[in-house]
Image (tube, rainbow, N blue to C red):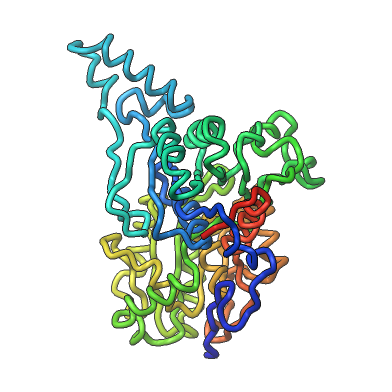
Length: 427
């Protein structure tokens, strides 16, 4: 098979430096460090870290995490704002202390803030999010170290990032990833997928009941401080894939080619499925086995047990098929680097975005189960020619390619432009 070269990052291979960057050296105010505010979700935090990588600040970042009380009645209170949730938890603990209802109310005290191993940036620690402390550090270090870039993602982080900008607007540049739904002027930039605006399109107006529209997508077209992407941001850039290719060389390089990687997610509100998709995937995989050298299957944390059990039982012991058992090390980055083609379930925008950044063939299964903005996302991928449906009739040895998705690089360019408008640059 013809090898596919990974895309080069900006400035590599003789590419001219964009004009917007040429004055960076002369700027007196330089952003040299980043603060990432996450919510404990690997998908959300990887979007922040992917943007920080694209801006060249991955070695100068601090990761804070917003945590909620967990266990007991707290599992029913996640719809509340974080601050209110914590206050109610504290009151309930005091009221029901030393009573028979204490175990029901308390559960576990708080979600433990783990080290950064799960986010893949080698951080030695993850700090509890505290807007006032972040503001104090940004102010105290501004004169010596310059402004701080704040990158946050997820519903629980909105109150923190917006408070930081309100309290220290002259010392920070705040980016909120994923649409906050209202009052976008609380942030310097909002980064969100184009399909979040699906309800404003003609198709969305016909498909989505009027009652549900305000809860599904923004009510107004994107403003000047909104940056639209095709999919999700991530850390799987060309440099990361080259490192993964080296790290996984001994295990993956000797495998018979072509190597087909199958990534299985789990049902969501907008893409519901069950064992029916598992059986469809099994049948289609068997149909393409003759054109594969080897197949590696991975499940995500969202994969229902009944789905993984059916697939694992069916493929167990097959000489061509390996199923990752979920134990570390996670081969995901190695798979992205060494695969010749991918099959990805339609529910996972993150896994599809990563696979489509490689320029290698990506086949999608389960799009018929998706609706609303997920359908819009898949339509965009098909129109760009970056995915094809997985039917079981494919010849995996016949490769094809496309311009890889580079959302993180494109967003980083917009961020640099917006920061330059303030007379700053990114170091």
